[in-house]
Length: 150
Image (cartoon, rainbow, N blue to C red):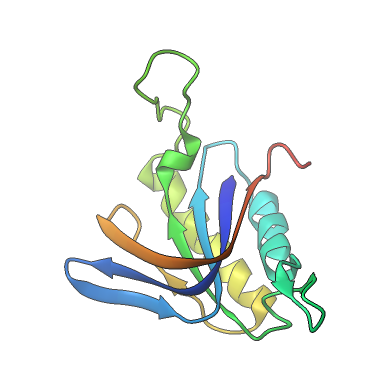
């Protein structure tokens, strides 16, 4: 499971002209799922998201989590995070999970994020053509791969 965390001043997801989710200060999380991902991966990443200290404290040091600042989170599925680009110029998405595996894993991941931050989160819609808007704050963008825990 690969995620991209973006610290945002605000973010939203629009589908077919209607806003599905909208947040103020917090995190926009893009998630790409592959077949070898497990519930343990989802749980580990949910803990990372909730507790990663990328918000400024009173001294301007990134020392606070989204929980600490009582921020919000939107989680958006993005199969293109599983792109393989080694050969040629057209990315291959063969590693990205199909709907029958990815949807339940995405929903499980979202549930785990909710449990971690103890509040509702915004989501996209799996497989939909989404328009994601954000104002990246910092900018701060972090990529984490549960299969390569560095």
